[in-house]
Image (cartoon, rainbow, N blue to C red; front, side, top):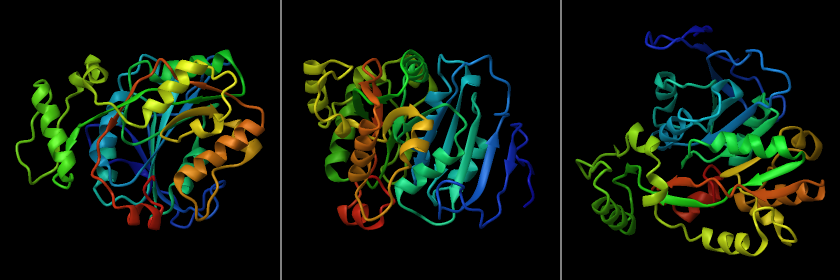
Length: 327
């Protein structure tokens, strides 16, 4: 199908189809087959105003991703000051069509890989397409608060050569999945019983989205969110070393691609995420070490609480064997 206007008459957006064998200029062997460039990202920017590129890799998470994109629609930051790049790792859940229908307030670009590839390659492809001076890495599962983009932009405007790593994250059930394991089924039911403002699934045999935009905009989610075991150690680090992490000896270990921001030029200096037979945590820690050795400063986004949307548990064999899903 040639490039042109999207068939959906409700929205004015362009759909650009790239050649099937066009390699990313930075990502090497990652081939991208379709890109939807939504709204004009070539608009003029005032003076030296920073511009951010939010990169979201995704694989078969259409409902959770749409909630993440909806939360970015509610940002206090001017929408002309950031773009969102979704890199779809060959999803089979109808994401391409849902992205076409999604009405974004910000510039939104969508790329899709030909076949599933490891997550580092997906992120690298997003970095190659980014136009912002600041790159914000974000997990497909994360609902962000309204000051999310503004906080990252202010941090980088205040200090150069800065890496902002994620702070507090809580868990929640935004979508009901029949494939939840027994523990998730019980926790989901118990959590929903406590908060009547969240929709109840009308069936246990279908995927059911549970949130409305009003609930996301209300700010109630961090209040009712579930604790995440991973964060207890990070809270202890913050308590001892502060959000600027002065004298913390293991800065590199705090770098996670689920929530971080960095100057885009850093990747030109130290390279992209490494490929090979590594777990995602090994890849992230390697990047953290390289940033630290290159003289970048680390601090925690201590004013941001993200909401991690629960997903069906994936067997360890599939995580480690394919490299498609984050470990």
